[in-house]
Amino acid sequence: MWILILFFGMSILSVIAYKYFPVYLTPLMVIRCCEQIKNGEKLKLKHEWKDLEDISNHMPIAALSAEDYRFIYHNGFSKAGIKRALEHNDGKHVSIGGSTISQQTAKNVFLWPNKNWFRKGLEAYYTILIETFWDKHRIMEVYLNSIEMGNGIYGVEAAAREHFGCSAKDLTRQQSALIAASLPNPRECNITSPNKHLLNYQKIILNKMTKNANQFPSEEEIKVIRKKDMDDRDNDEYRSDILSRILRWN
Image (tube, rainbow, N blue to C red):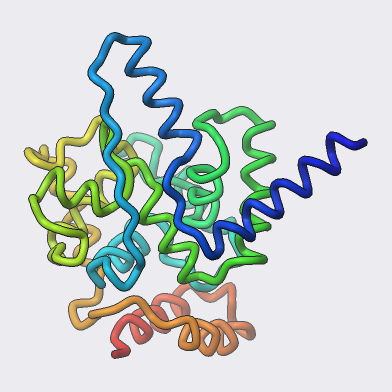
């Protein structure tokens, strides 16, 4: 009993703490470093925290377009996203994940890369916590700073420096889409010399990104749109139209 109380208390406190403080180290970073040492490889861990305001406006839109276009609508879980993943991953060259950005953030920050039911259960628990204590901007900010983007590369700032020689703030629309295209399998994708499938996925993402979009919607705008969507939350065509209008807002 005391172990459960301690776990719940520590997990809630850690989620609340990360609402205000940057995430400099994650379990996955430690695991990858241990794997490198075990395999006799040179230790590589590149990561630099950047506030969302210091990341190119194209990057969150690219991530949203590639990974979870319902991100601003759902409360952490998307049945449609899981269904879409099952449909697209069968016999397709491009892998489309079923987890939402919120679920991926929970896994990246608090857990380890394992697909058993115990870990998935913890992922669901932490997803509920971050959706409860963080707003959508904070979730996107932590996501873009903690996600694995290559061998020993974590976060968009490190990825931008490694692959394009620029800061995350200066990423172009095309570069952001290419980074987003690599997210399903970042350790295998070569962003510096992308293959045909990666470039094709980049084009798909670019087509999803509204040409006139220049910033991720503010938290106030998200709240307004979510309220408007309450009466028609199961209408995919309506959602896509609303999302397109959100991304055009300045």
